[in-house]
Image 1 (tube, rainbow, N blue to C red):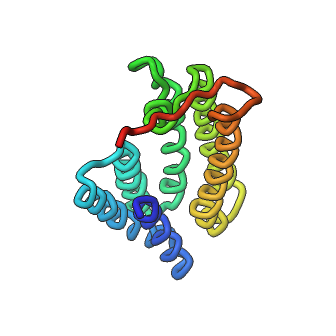
Image 2 (tube, helix red, strand yellow):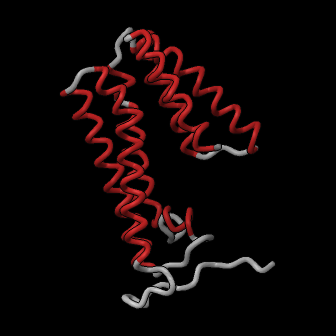
Length: 191
């Protein structure tokens, strides 16, 4: 359910754009939809992830510029800025606390050797950098409508493909795999 709520403002943006072909109006709807999503997330789970706050700030800042100036180019930069900020966060995370961000996110469910965690973290850095660059290519070389569809369907699809590839990579390091022997048992909670 949480993932659905996270994608709801983007879906609303796409629906409004498809109905009106007006990126400024779609952005004007995106801003309160994102605020509502963040408020609902706080109300429901009593916590917010940094991603929610970064996204909200960029939607308000770049979306606000789009609405005030009537220029859709501002909101088109949001996915690039978000992805590149995540790339920097993943890249610098080992400098703060010694663990990569991906390890901090997944270590409760999975135990892996330090080099595997580092490779996974660097893969996410590369993925976020690439997604930011692809967004620029799409919004500078294709129509606005193509970019709007890419923002929802293309980015989501590429993320799912990347996660599947990551799953294949992780499978080599899970217990019971005779090929590597490098995996260890995941943490199991005592009942």
